[in-house]
Image 1: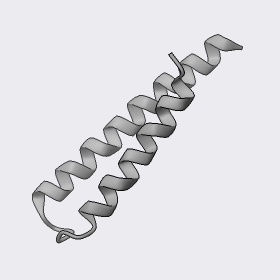
Image 2 (image 1 turned 180 degrees about the horizontal axis):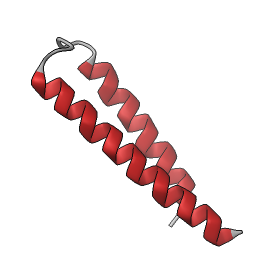
Image 3 (image 1 turned 90 degrees about the vertical axis):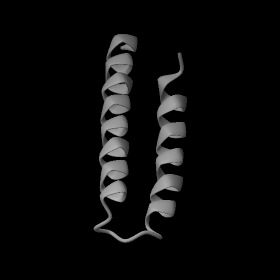
Length: 57
């Protein structure tokens, strides 16, 4: 699997979602939950990307 490509794709999608979320009230509970889910997804993807990069070295 090309983790670099997948990670870049994920970051792009997260950026799009953040742009949408910015149109809602910052204190809205659903916006907060969505932000937490996005951050979690990015952290997990980053861990996979780093692990894959280390095994390629």
